[in-house]
Amino acid sequence: MDFISILSIFVMACFVGYYVVWSVTPALHTPLMAVTNAISSVIIVGALIAAAAGSQADGGQTAKWLGLVGVVLASVNIFGGFAVTERMLAMYKKKERK
Amino acid sequence: MMRNALIGAAALLFSTPALASSGEPVNPWVAAAYLVAGVLFILALRGLSSPESSRKGNRFGMVGMLIAVVTTLVTHSIASLPEIGVAILIGGGIGFVTARKIAMTDMPQLVAGFHSLVGMAAVLVGIAAYLNPGAFGILDATGEILTVSRVELGLGVAIGAITFSGSVIAFLKLNGNMSGAPIMLPLRHVINLGVLAGIIGLTAYFAIAPTVGTGPVFWTIVGLSFLIGFLLIIPIGGADMPVVVSMLNSYSGWAAAAMGFTLGNTAMIITGALVGSSGAILSYIMCKAMNRSFISVIAGGFGAESGPADGAAKIDRPWKRGSAEDAAYMMKQAENVIIIPGYGMAVAQAQHAVREMADLLKEEGVNVKYAIHPVAGRMPGHMNVLLAEANVPYDEVFELEDINSEFAQADVAFIIGANDVVNPAAKTDKGSPIYGMPVFDVEKAKTIFFVKRSMGGVGYAGVDNEVFYMDQTMMLLSDAKKMCEEIVKAL
Picture 1 (tube, chains in turn cyan, red):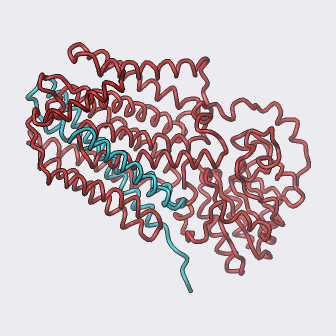
Picture 2: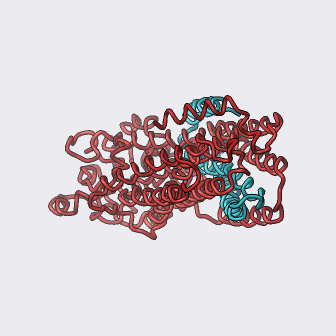
Picture 3: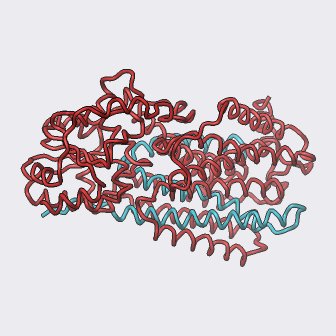
């Protein structure tokens, strides 16, 4: 993709983010942080590419190991982030109507 | 100059099929899969607009992540699948167990810790891309890293490193391994601005210099960025952590977005933009709730200047001490009780005791509501999570602007572990450091119970609180949890 297309997606996504986040109820701001944490670990895509590439190039071997460490860190976040969000959200209950 | 480089690079990208040089076919289905992942992430955040839809949203997020990971694995020739599997298992295991075991009161430090991992992952990916640019498809025809990719790499690594070291400091402060008090270095503003200028200058140089020999420049950017993250956060005090944690949340998003630009990956770009704006909005909300500018929070040192010197003179004013029995009696008679929790409730782990107390009051026919200030606690929404944990229904919990008018009808305002957010000086005393901050009108309530460990401490801002000395105020000097348990007994 060319730079301008990418930039367009980015700018649009910023606007979407702005409106979506303002609609989040303040009571759920902590789960919001936990879940944004989990999804920002989509950076694992980059780590996977580095880890998968192997050692064709000069720096490939080092890059592979850095990628693997990146995969570990991002996985901690993905599993931890989604699990802790799920745990928190399960606690929000409405008043029991009698 | 950097702008010209960017425009030039963009033109370069237009004119040459840049990705073709890396041998990566541009498959529309792959692009579509990443786009779907990105949209699912948007839906994950959208779900949080109400507690009912929130869990469905979280599932969308998980599916989105699965799609992103599987797409990446399927579309790249994998030379090391077992290692990757092991890496995911190790990381996933650690993450899952941590998420299960963590106490809800420790949520702020958990989130800070998670931020540091995203930051570090971004740095590692950036370094890997620099070492093995071919695998990332960012080489031009002559085997040099594309100029625009270098800008993205430099920025991505810098933001990632700042996120990492900043979050580590935030984690240590929140977890109590490091004093929450601001640490003030002499000339810190000059040092910080110098380091920041260095990072920007070096990134610009890194972008335009030939690839060969830029190693030291790249590593210096990484090193300086780690340093500035550390320097930026040490002068910021404990109660300003909601802003800091939100800000680092935002940074972790921008770091992911920068890497997304490098890889031309829509899932990463959309996520980065979402997380970046989310963190920025939360920081804004927190700053507004303290009536402070973002700059003044980041400059740090709040609460450090006003020492105990002037506090000593005021301590002799008359105040009334109440007992658990008084509180139980008064609240049982009351029609409306508003409970205002603060960080002290979290520290004392008193949320369950508070809920028990409220349950007993409700049985007596008392109308109990909770009032939560945006900056109560150590992260946005901290008090809401704790009350939810203690099984307080979320429709009994109200935000500042929704409940503030009800204090005039309230018979009892029960303040537990909060201080600055109920200080009327924010409305009346122009000289006060918290002047202009929106606060609860507790002084309008007929009776005020103020649970506090002792008369000594005066909140984060170090400002004396007029509420202590009011006629209708009774101080309940005790540990928050113990006091609530005693009141429960007395009821």
